[in-house]
Length: 81
Image 1 (spheres, rainbow, N blue to C red):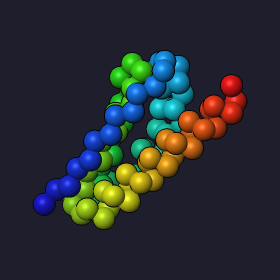
Image 2: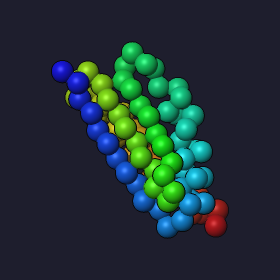
Image 3: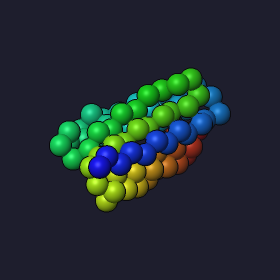
Image 4: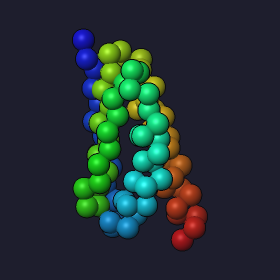
């Protein structure tokens, strides 16, 4: 059985979306292929994150991690002006 999650995050402008995308991209590239499949795309002012895996626990753990990284990146960017 394959489990999948899709997340779309909308930003105010393309610059914010692009900066957050660049901050998270290294995490996407470092995800181990045997554990799960993670893809991320930049769509104008939105970021789309797709996570798939063979177990609910793996997908949930990755989804929680990416949400936390996205949130932290946004907070840090907001502090910098």
